[in-house]
Image (cartoon, rainbow, N blue to C red):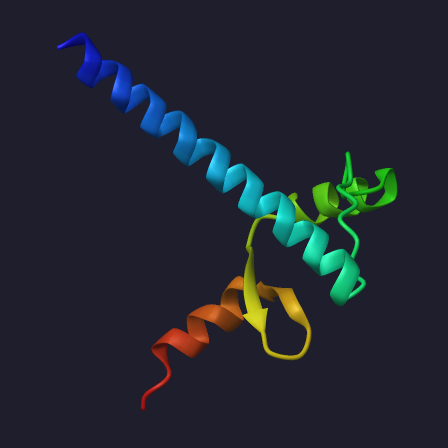
Length: 89
């Protein structure tokens, strides 16, 4: 019984090492062939961007956020969104 448990642990550890090695080699390949370095950011957002995001998320009452194809996420007034929903087709 213990030998089966030991073999399963060895298999899981070997699989883990294989995946980690494959990821590492993929990163090396990206850097050497495609010149895309792996530089992880500790914080992807600057303080100015964080403040802007917080202000965007604080919605006024009566406003909704909608996705626009050109502008991205924009505020839509509640009355406009209700008119769009109740407009006859």
